[in-house]
Image (tube, rainbow, N blue to C red; front, side):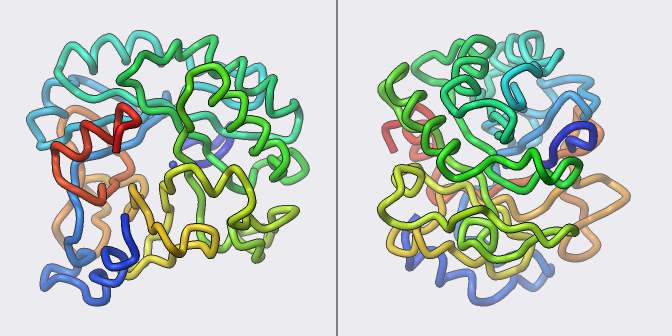
Length: 258
């Protein structure tokens, strides 16, 4: 996941079980490969085809900063839920607006119900590095979501970014690493790491990831981890995610009961 205008987001023993890759070249399976994430940049033809491709959940970009709203969000939510898919949304955090204001904008569009997954995308703003969300803003966003809904969002991030290490094309760093004392670390981790063996950020070392984005912009013509495509019917490309659990666990997790 990236910022505008180039927008394309477990236990320790589960992480350890990824120590080897499968014979097909994919990450060794220790989770449920049934969650995708997309934005308005993805062309969607039929969410029913998505569901029939063994996909159970969709996380869609909703907002960015405090003043950008994904124009396809509301209609696609209706379509996806009608197709029987679990629906989630994510907010791309920026520095331009206070975290509380960004949370208010996100909630105004998403109107999350009890079974709507909520997520904060905490990563460098490659298109506008000076507009990268700071840790205090992320903490304010998380707390505002909790006050409004009684639930914490999940947090999408890369291990280097969360650990305060230089990351990305521009070699940016989060202004402070996420530590175990930060409210951000209380959120479940949606890990972005495209290596066959992912790294868990220090703040989540004792909990591990709940979602792992292992492949980005997956298309028929561009297969990650080998020659077999992980593309999904019904849309032109998507990001693929593993869930640390089974289908029943995914449903509980989606509603904040995992």
